[in-house]
Image 1 (cartoon, rainbow, N blue to C red):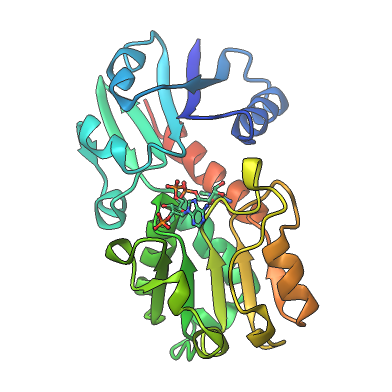
Image 2: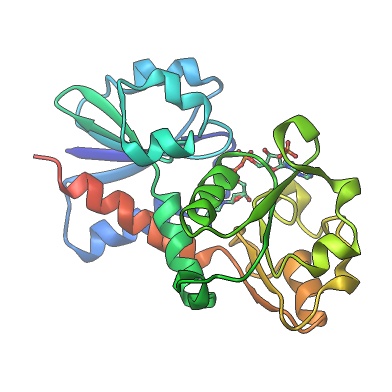
Length: 249
Ligand SMILES: NC(=O)c1ccc[n+]([C@@H]2O[C@H](COP(=O)([O-])OP(=O)(O)OC[C@H]3O[C@@H](n4cnc5c(N)ncnc54)[C@H](OP(=O)(O)O)[C@@H]3O)[C@@H](O)[C@H]2O)c1
């Protein structure tokens, strides 16, 4: 049996188990299984890694950064991002990677292809400073798109929420929600942004995929902005994790 799974807490909202189970069923991979492993503490990972047949794990909230010091190796992207969403177990070694980077880049290519040209000419605002924010920031840095990170604690970002006024929003044509505001317990909640400064020239990306439309997206749409949710990113990052696991001997 080749085993895969996802670690995080809570995991009820994760779409990854269904996504991988469907993929295995479609490909007739009867000896593959994908489970939810809800951990109370990241220290429980070392025991989980001893599971017979375990080949790979996805990592989600709140462990994407905490997991770094529990792995034997990090690939170049995971090192640069400082967060891991995919673990590959190869010859008893645990290797951390970050496929959220690939997922977000693919989503951007679809919605804002001009960013991949020689002169992006856009400023961005990245909301939240957790694991996904690190991956999004890495992609923007690579594309040489200037951006600011908004955090509840100024030590973790460039701006506090109180500093995000109409001028900041007006000049940040790309805004990416990397917070959980709008999903789970925070479903229906809007972010404290001056939405009236958003125009039809703005693009709003919410990394949340369930619900498919968040208050952040609704408010943006009402101002004429182009909006998209995290579904395309979810699919692309899962595909990239699967490619890594398929390379295993
Ligand atoms: N579509 C995809 O493929 C994909 C991939 C990864 C993540 N995501 C989604 O992205 C979101 C973040 O995931 P993550 O793994 O980065 O989580 P995380 O590591 O917990 O980071 C979330 C960040 O959001 C901010 N935040 C948390 N609660 C907040 C609140 N009540 N108000 C304002 N800000 C708050 C925090 O930043 P500060 O403490 O600095 O304020 C926190 O670091 C989740 O909704 C997740 O489902 C989607």
